[in-house]
Length: 499
Figure 1 (tube, one colour):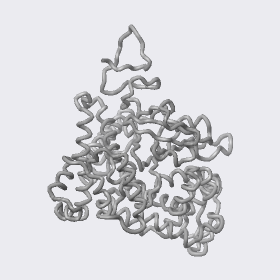
Figure 2: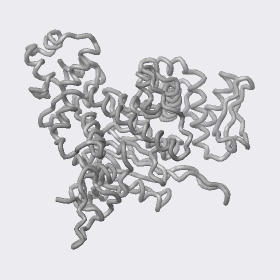
Figure 3: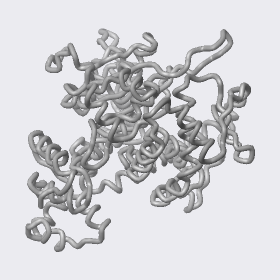
Figure 4: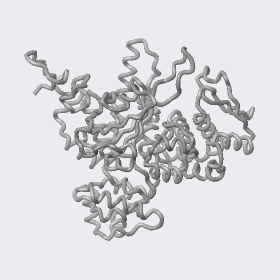
């Protein structure tokens, strides 16, 4: 079944790319999930695909790989992009399971990698619930430790109704966003329509937004000198019809906040509909999801999908040029690039991550195979940490994760500068990464020999789960393996694995 309409060319090109790189693709669980989602029988789907029901049954049970010739038809039938049938989500799940099984509570030596891979292929939903169970276990451990040290963490609720989201509300929201590949079509298109309606490209976006809020909602914007002392960047007083903004930030941040406020004022119904379709049950998680969608709308309004995608392609994803063209911050441009997954009009699949100087992950989204360490600290060899030693300068790195994937990473510090000696602004950095196969489309690949293995830095998921034995930077021994305590010699790494 051929692709139809405007989506045809990009999808066909993507399938051709997958065909060139593919060996055997097992997608049974994903086909079965989509078929059940639309209420289609196996026989009906087989008829549409022009194959026998027994052949489709073998594909769905992963005894036969998915022929690349059927991929286009499946994308058409289920209205999904070709990337849906890649092994991206499976790779993330495998990495999460490997990290979990490195915990001493399990016998990692008794579980082979091929067993983990088979479990992800055959029972991905069960594996996902296992990950949730382990996260709930860690949360209980934290509460127990807090109780012993006099901490004040709130009690963990244990009723069946609360159980699904009581891993942590922010983690539940992050899982939801990741499941959507950090792209929300309805919100994105609403923001794009709003951009054209307001003609934000015909002047300063900040001035245009301030004028629109006043003309259409009677809300004026004012600077509140004491707002930052209350821990707020902006506050909307609906009765007074005033949007108060902090004075401590650059203009692009103020513009972003006005876009957030506009989203709250005009699109709450849309946000509610999107959240209602999620599996988020707890009110706190649903509230955080609303905050996320408000931020998403603001980014999509200032960087409308079609215009931004074309501009990014034209300047080879030069982030500083995109900053100036659209009047946004470096972080906003990076984050928007990680959301360009509109079916049929996808941009380069990026991962995006933000961390503070201590290594705490503040934001993390991925449209490619990359997955951050979920149960351990980030790798110190990652260029996001080198960025802190060269503030406001872009750091470029080729890195290889433990699953063999190679990425081009762009990292830089972000955030405001100090305004006084006593001011303590948060030190943060962001990293944007894509597969090395997409690197030639980025200006940051200029001058790099992408085929030279010496340029590639091996990074891991965090020392305790990392399987690289001879790393000079290992800070902790590999969990699940005995440490070599031989005093007659010393290895390159401080903790060697006993043979």
